[in-house]
Length: 303
Image (cartoon, rainbow, N blue to C red):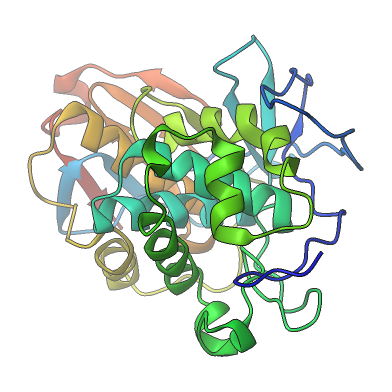
């Protein structure tokens, strides 16, 4: 399964485990391998002094003893898919980089399907031959240094740069576009993840409101400084998205990005357009504008 540009697919890199398994929309699907379940996670963010179409509140990590996980709905069926906090953050970075580079939403679907097949949205420090990272890119094939490839921001950017060089990729089937970037020995495998990838992409690009929910039983590591979240949003999305009016689609994109980053950035609540997500509830609930005390077209971050 040698590739000219990517690493060899191991055949074991299948990820997002649906709570109910919908049928993939690929042309020639392969049998799913090793499907497990992750639980729902809830979280919201807040960094003081910042206001954006989303309200974020940093918590103390004193959540109830519930399994950590994130969920999103299938666009094809009534199924719910579940992923871990780490997978959610990696997926959000992939979507954010597309926004920074001006790539259309279809590119996010292609990228997510690729990473789902290659690594289950995990940033792996190993792989076939010298393959590494979210997309199993190879330093020996010119994708960058090992350190660069292990940076999800860099890896996603490199993937999109290669995708943009594929003539007509915008109208191709997901698996065809992915294959022309990856050059895998299993070219149809990406089709197995199209439903999951498209469903996750619609949430992360703001096509659907409140598309991703997470619930946590605590936060990961030590709490980062208040400035860390703003810095991450600038690095990944390309500009500071907190404290400025945003459109509905962009606002939900930013809000979902915040929820997906909640575990590592110790975010306990996120609000946008009259809805608030909290780490303890794990759901998006309606909140009156007067009650929230923030503009509904901005993302507000409070620490």
